[in-house]
Picture 1 (cartoon, rainbow, N blue to C red):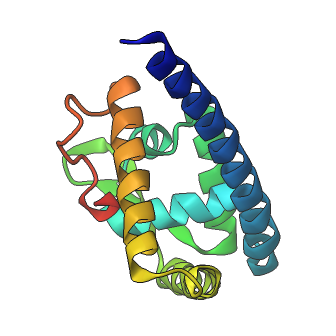
Picture 2 (tube, rainbow, N blue to C red):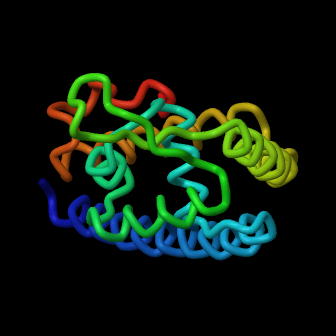
Length: 166
């Protein structure tokens, strides 16, 4: 690879790093400020969202999906259970085990928060052309796949572990 091209690639990689870090930081603060208005933390919301999308999960599986250790996931579930958003049910595959399942109140919470966040996203992208919006989605999906490959979550860049991610 010519040096000039390699320098451009390095500069673009550094700019991407900075842009992604800023985007994640802003989104996390936005999520924290918005989601906490519903009496749950961002992590608690993500747990409810995971259970809505995937159905009942064992605690270890929920922890893995959320990139948390089991003890942290257990505290998150305990709090959500006290608030009535999840419940523990018997695991049909292993009578000694339990699964965590979202309740109707949890589904309602998820739908309210998701609706509000999507309305904000819609407003944020309303001034962009359809081509820019689609290009951004393509880029984000490709970056997500590349990161999943790097983290060992999927084997190849074009296999899809989570169909909802596109």
